[in-house]
Length: 248
Image 1 (cartoon, one colour):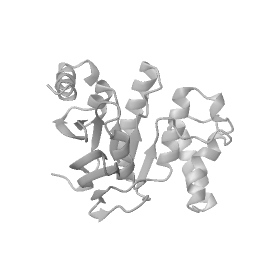
Image 2 (image 1 turned 180 degrees about the vertical axis):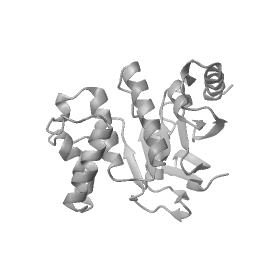
Image 3 (image 1 turned 135 degrees about the vertical axis):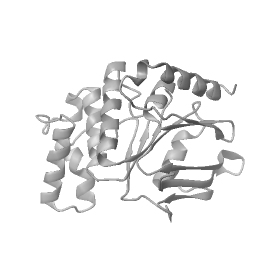
C-alpha cells in the first residue's frame, strides 16, 4: 500500500441540529492516485469536497494531508469548480496568474509558470483573450491551468466537465490523466456520470442515503488505460457502480 496523501476520519457535517448532511465518512487516497465520488444529487458530494479543501469545517471528524490536520485552505490543494470559477474581466494570462499574485509569487516565476502551463494546455495565442471569447473546452483548460500553476500535490474537482460535449469531455479527461501522471498529482473528482467516474477513478466511492454515507468503494485497476472506454472491463465496472448507486 502506498503513502496516504489525503485522509478523512469520521467526517460529519450538520447545517443545523436537525439537518445532518454527511455522517461518519472515513476513507483515504494514496499519493498519486485518483478517487472519483458519485451519488445522487443533493447527497452532499460538493460539501464533502469543500471539507477536503479546507473551505468548510466538519461538524466532527477531520481531514488530514500527509498526516497533518486540515484547518483551512492549503497551498497543497488546487480546486476546480463546475462553473470554472474564471474572472470574466481578466484575460487568460490574468486568470492564470491570479492565484500566484495573491500568494506573492515573484513576477519572473509567475511568467515562467504561466508560459509553461499555457503551452502545455495548448492555449498559446489566447493569452490576451477573455473567457467570453473562448469555447467551453478552452475555458475548462484555463481553469485546469490556473489550478496547476500553483503546483498543488492534490487536485479536487467538482463536476469539472459537466457542461461540455462528449468528445471535448473525453479529450479533457485524457489530458487530465496525462497531467496527473506527469506531475504525480493525487486527484479527487465529484461527478454525476458513471462513465466519467469509471474512466478517471482508480477507486469509485459511491455515496447515498440521508444523512449521506458510503454505499460502496469499487476498485478500478484499469482506469484511464488506452482503449479502456470500449473494453468489457470498463462496462463491467460501470454495471457494478450503477448497482451501488441504485442501492441494489
